[in-house]
Amino acid sequence: MTRLLNSLLNLLRDARNRLDYPLRQLVRWQRAGFRIAPRLRGDPFAALPAEDRPSAMALADRLIRTYHLEDFAAQTTPINYRENLFYLHLLESALEATPISLPETVRAADVGPSHWFYVQALAAVLRWWQTPRPRQIDLQGYEIDAYRVYADLHSRYDHALGHIRGLTGVTYIPRGFSTQPAAFHLIFMLFPFVFPEDHLKWGLPANLFQPRALLRAAWQSLQPGGALIIVNQGKAEHHAQRALLEAEGIPIRAAFRHDPLLFRYSLDRFVLTACRHA
Image 1: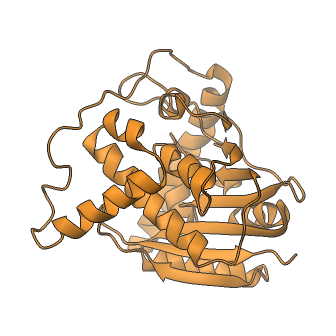
Image 2: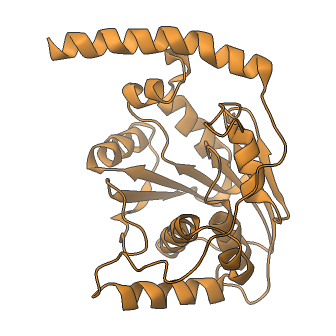
Image 3: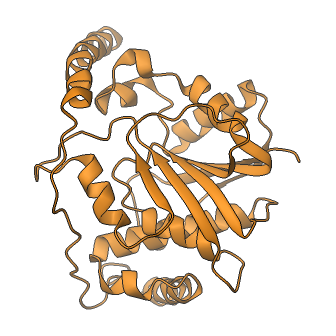
């Protein structure tokens, strides 16, 4: 009975999404003026257990200094500050676990960034990872549902532009990712949908749920020597993503659960990386 009810619910979601999603693409709602209001006062790690706070603060200080994020730290909210540092540490760990060297000018794609709240971390790691001088970056974020409207009457696109403000070499592209043969040094897929229920809950019609095709497009878009970095939430999603990589014959280079010291989510974050042979 539960399975039948879930199937009916998914059919209803799909019917709604088949109406809502095309309408969003037609209207393309945007409203200027969205900004991140800085509210960083006091200790952003005050809610952590006392035994974890010294380690969290030391790690945060190192990340801020290494990746030159002092201005960002002074101009954002406590939650966005901590989430960006969490993502920065995660991405740093993923790169260190993957045998890749980045050129002086790096081209990267982020597939499905939503409102790109973590873009400061992503741009910083591309620009400063293992280099004393900043790289030139060409970072492109591909979002298939960029015109979803939030409660503040700003669209996902508006929020993304607010988070991008002040960054050079970063572009938010309001369409889905498609194959661009050998175009990128790095491709990121942070929380791609691997279960149809999640895809439908986030407002996308069922016919757009093509996780293997999307994975294949990302893999084929890497330059020789490039790397694919995927992040999933929870063990079930991690194992399903791993099975997709294996089904596509994509060799997994690293797989690990990321330490939740800087930000704790209800589901742990798991990382998978793969390198395309030179």
